[in-house]
Image (cartoon, rainbow, N blue to C red; front, side, top):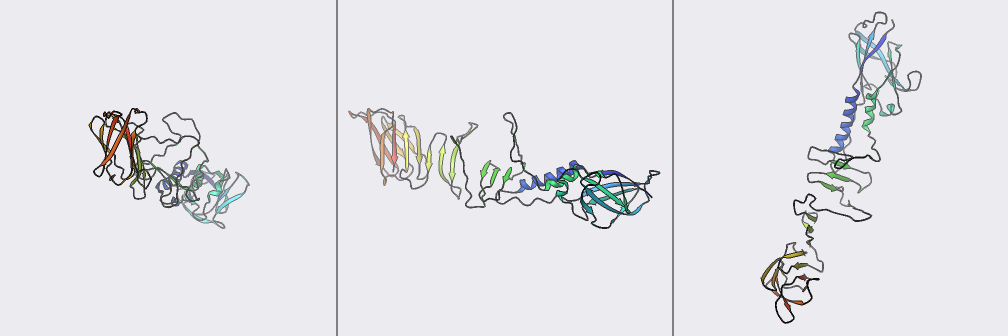
Length: 350
């Protein structure tokens, strides 16, 4: 008896494709900068296929039972090249109830994403040795299998208005918003995180970070203007090695020749400073006209120092100084006739 084959459903393309893409993207999001992204959970290489067998004369469903079936995929609606066949030889029993049957294509012979890489594909069904026609074109569902190996575009382009972004990755969890990994060493980049950061591969002790510019390289502190931002360079222990605040005050630890310096305004306020010894800001006390005491917050009575009237502060005065106690430098600014006068000055500790 001839048979009439009617497709009821061939999976759900949108859902399968979305799941495939989610699995790949979720895997990338879960991978941290301390390791390469874990292998993506494999997209199931099966397609749920459902059909209906009916008597061609009456249109009524065939009797319930087990029918021997074989499934094949071709690259054309007629003739063409055989791309896949299940089973490879013979047939497999498929239960039919009410004329309806369901089979997972790929459950016997694996479906490879390469089958669908060449364009249109068509499913041929054989029932009890009879070839059913016409072949059924396979839609987007099978092409979700290709999402198992995502192809990343070499570039993104578009026209967006500020403050919109061409690409937004939003991670609502606590991990990284993005992780870029390269087979070449030292070429990993992580974006985002709890405080917003750019990291090279922290699992590689030789992973350097290069910032390159053909013109100025600008680091803007306190972009919202609400706080006193500080640029910090830290060592592996998380301690500040060098800091620069918004006022230009510099503090760097180390054995450089100049240990500390301060520019003091005529009224005794600190104009700018740096401290390479312990990073503490110097304090200034103005006791009288032209008399200042500068506390560097570290021992200075065993060091060299230089004191001078700051550039542009007036050349009609000179300063004399001497170390008092352990941490203090006393400064007195006076005119040629010995009269004390308020002047801006600077002290450098070596």
